[in-house]
Image 1 (cartoon, each protein chain N blue to C red):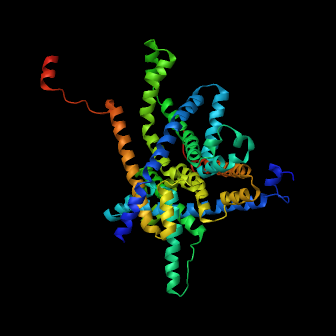
Image 2: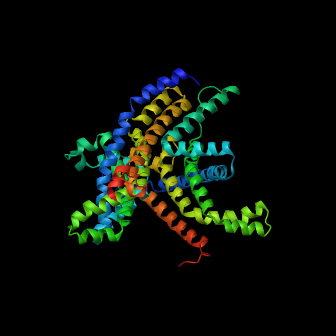
Image 3: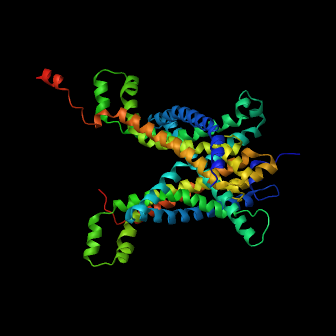
Length: 240
Length: 239
């Protein structure tokens, strides 16, 4: 293998990492908000909301992300009304189209994860909160949501990682993130294997760090699952 | 000139792209099936290495699943498509061919999808094998079955039963991943829609119908999977 070429590729690809991270972070953050809304709709017991959320999730999980990206980026421009609307400056920009598509797609997957987390909250906890006199909203904010987040975190970390991988599709609509730059180098040099090794290593590193970070958050959020730290001698003495 | 309606576009009339789209959908199913079968092979090999392999085999299988689940599928497709072309061109030059020989997109796509889904399939098979009760294996040994008969009569059917839900998930992923193969020029559903969108100037209509066809394929195959799950579980007592 040609070390100089690998190094050169690595340096070129590093400059594209911020864009990949930016795409992933923005769409995951926006998607999480949308997903929470969808999950609440699913569990609201109000049938129009429930069925809207069901339909949304069915459609976005049943179609390839690339089709969704094309539908938004190329498809919407077909309508004169869209081209003349105030949103056109967003919808003709591949960056924002990629973010919208990624956000809508991840929302569908995350909604089911969050719903699972919300449903896993033990009923006793909610009853206890109600018994303390908390309002419905306060119960949700202080009890249900934190417990649900803790419950859903392992599955959600998988979703975040698959979103980092999904940002690569943005390269197909001309966005030069890591995969886009990698494809450009491949088509200029025809050295697919070397470029693949470098780009793959970058994605692996990003995903490895992400899993570590989520594991750390999970650790912080579940002190009840750990052994209690041994009490210092003085404190133990005072307790007698 | 009046614009053809949506139904004209997807029909089989003079303006209709119906037959082309149907052929594209068929190609999508074929390429997804081919990729899925390759993935099953890789998955079976990987699970076998992880369960029964020595330290080297386990290490290789572990690296395989970690790496392939951590990098984008699109990158793997680029690797197989461009990398395959490079290798094939080099071979061609040995035999006196000149210039660039491109690797067949169908093969590159099926291999790429197979290798990525194989990593997921490995974990599905491994988990399913672990779910088989040791008592069943002991009973098989006690009956005097040889390792091969044990695998064929006891391990394979039971593993399949536990693996089926996971295999169904992998199939849905493979089906959606097959859309990425359109970048290699294989005229599957998405590529056909792109061609139609380009030549009619009606991108929304064609990507919309493509989305509906994908939805239909995944719904129908989902129903089939549910049916077969019921069938392999018909011997299980519930409640």
